Length: 256
Length: 271
Image (tube, rainbow over all chains, first blue to last red; front, side, top):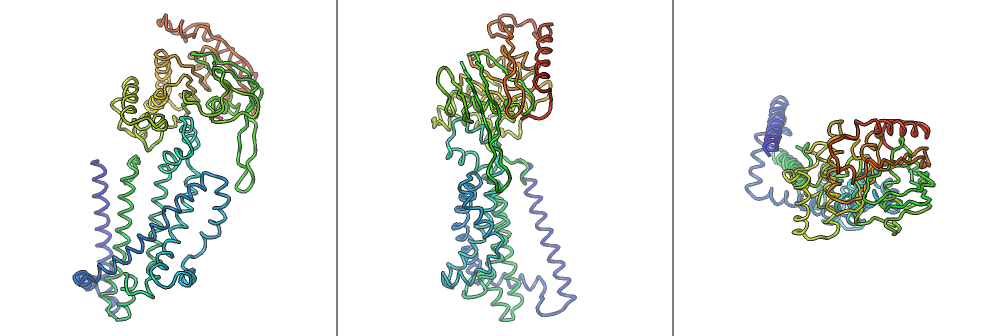
């Protein structure tokens, strides 16, 4: 417990120091360059505070967060279930693996026009695009991780009279959970990048919209404020996944 | 009694990413009987099919020929009162000592209160009561082994199969674990079948030692009876250490010779 607390504190210190270093570098470059498109961090933070006060920030950040969470809801569980099943069953794998080989290397963003033609230019298309990306990454991670579950663990639990369902619940899911959460972290990064792109048109909400909107209004401090907010959203989601991992994988002493 | 008749086993080895798995013969033509309430040992070099034998008796691997019966009933799947302890103990890293020990009862859909009661008495008996909240990663090898034994005992087995149970322990812990096994056996009339690399271990613990040899398939080569190790005799007079008698050394020598004849001794990794 104490070690965990110290590790937490260490990590928070690390984030603060890194943030400070980036802000300092930013301030120096802004002064040296002296151009309007790169205001100092002070101006950007002031714009961020202004956006937060008027409630604008909450609306846009909420919209972005909502899209990511919905994308997670529709993609994570189906991808995990299908991937784990494929990793443990030759028959299911025969169907899933070809799908993986075709889907995974594709740049999913390129499907945006097709998705929009199919689902319209509204909210659903954005959620499906982000969900598509998370789905593909989780599917691969789940399949590979399920394949690596030690044979001996499976055998030892089978010898206690476990059914296939028991094995899935008591062995395969907990064994693969850390890998699933790691790949979730990775895919969240990609998801945010793609979300930005999806929010640059056909919407009036989201941090991606706010960034491009501020850019077109030549309100550079606000543009940087929105970029900071989007980064903050990413950081927040990372910390959230960390927290979830600590909660559901308490047996991993090496996790910090 | 565990009776093995004309047993042949195969296992599947995947032949690469795309190709179909290959069937490899593990053992063939095995006939033997393991006496009830006795400790029997199977010794043999790596790859002779010892582990496949354990899996077959446990009902995890179906015979490709022949059959195994336990007290007259043919084994056709996992049996509730057969417990297996694997080389790396097979503990689930994400469950505590308590959680691992109660797993057989969880799988048998036994209620929480009943589970707690039965697990608690076994943990106390094995000296694990203070560690019930620990995860396996926080335990020494010897302690993990005890947890594995606890998990086996919780299902109240009449047959206990052990696949190289002591091989990952250091020498001193290993001797302590052997004594521990005898002590556990003393309080319960289980049939124990022990697979081991160690001739010394087999001769010290078992009243019947089966020597296997060959590879793909392995076969049964020889059988040694050690009446000195019968449970009745062993516990009547606990003062003499069998390992210090000439008879013990002589048996070790004979078994070593039998192993050499059957295709060599190696002390390497398990099959």
